[in-house]
Amino acid sequence: MVRGKLGALRLRVQLAEDRILPSKYYQPLIDLLVESVLCPPEGKEELTALDLLEEICSVDSRQDVATKLVKIFLGQGLVVPLLDYLNAGEASRTTDPNTLFRSNSLASKSMEQFMKVVGMPYLHDVLKAIINRIFEEKKYVELDPCKIELSRTRRISFKSSLSEARIQESSLEVLKGYLRDIVEAIVGSVERCPPTMRVSFKHLHKQVEKCFPGMENQDAKYVAISGFLFLRFFAPAILTPKLFSLREQHADTQTSRTLLLLAKAVQSIGNLGLQVGRGKEQWMEPLHPFILASVGQVKDFLDRLVDVEAENEGREKEPWAPFHPSATIKEGYLNKRRADGLHLVSRFTFKKRYFWLSNETLTYAKSPEWQVRTSIPVQRICAVERVDENAFQQPHMMQITTRDNGGQLLTMYIQCKNVNELNQWLSAVRKATISNEWMLPFCHPGTFRGNRWTCCLQTDRAVRGCSRTHSAVTLGDWSDPLDPDTEAQVIYRQLLLGRDKLREKCVELSRAAATGMEPGHGAPQDTRARSRPAAARLLEVLQDLECAHRAFEDQEQEEEEAAAAQPVPCP
Image 1: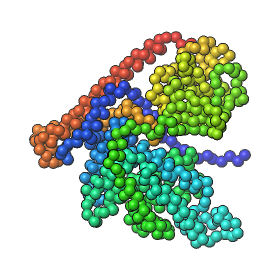
Image 2: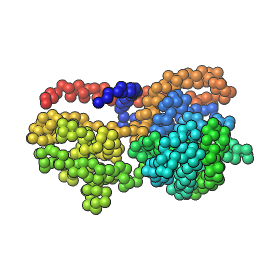
Image 3: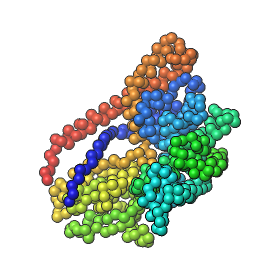
Image 4: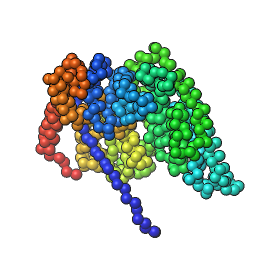
């Protein structure tokens, strides 16, 4: 065996652990945020809680804050008014329409996250088929003469090596074919676009048209929408399908290059061809005629997209969920075994079954086509935990504990293919059960075998679990359920980090009040009077939440000390 020197990998890992309080403690904060949108100030210089939040949060945290804001307002049925408020402020501060929404402002990040949260099923409906075809066909595509590899031409022609020009010609035809399918899928998807997205784009269209009137700015209203829809949604999904759950694995090097070229072209189409010929990549020129010919289709698509009937504009107030309750949110083959019945543990005690998970049921059968299926109501699941490897001498194990009609606990053990699949299933089931009542606080990470638990060696099968259960999930995914308490906690933490800036703002406004002038402006005193309470009330909310956290910490510490004083059975 030839031993070579392995490469080094440097990781930066950050673990964040937070305590989520009951809903009543976050309500004052949510009320302040909602008030910013529903009762906006009359004067432009007046500050709201949302304005202050954007001022004090860092650029690095803006995406996370935007995601939580979008979800909070989705839960309130007010996401379109939120986006209107943020977009109006962004448009009023922008002097050049060419730079509109091109920064990482809270408005642009909120629109970007809004599309991911609300529009991901729509994205899958539009792009998944063509993305799958690109992965399966694995065609060699290259337009840049500096990157063409003549050795790969055998995959194109078995007769002889192809010239550089022939490779470019063949690649151009392949790219145009893919692009034609992508553009046709997008422009033909108006009716499938979520009504909430269409309404938000309609309002954005009107705002930009109002701020930038005149024939010289006639494309601004199109670019504002296509900048979000094409540049921040469709093009990134084409470039990295795995990040948008279009594929389970990243593309190989050859497919990645094809996706990159397609994403570049889609970006140019989204820019309405305004940047065509101005870049350094002149080798993209053969695609320019196709890009320019697609601009008219895109404009017509955007016109139809924002042509929403009046009755649809109220749909954003309907309850929102990323999936229909019965829609499958995860599926695949797993190995299962019930806890009761068998004492012999071997690989034959596990049966390969195909599982489907929705927000209503966890279902399994011998195969996807098998008609006889077993379904477990999600509301009966009361624990989803890992299993120690020594319990079955098998890795990547999880257990799902349910409660039957008689109140008896039943446990099903499941083996996944690898640790990634294990984490994905743990997170998916926990998300589906996040609102379940009577979840178990403790469980056994082992199994009951040989008249005792393998984890704590207790001989009583009904004894309380020896390990705490968990509710942790992989957050930040577009399919995360709405959880106002968790989302408000993130906003609170960001405000807490910027509390010094908030205090400085209060002092600044107080000093301005003494002189009768707004800092940096000539605003009258009534404007100042309405600006100061927003900052002051935010500080009061932060102080109340901080006191509540301390009280819960003290209570938890007392419970841990009391538990530590009790004897624990030795293994």
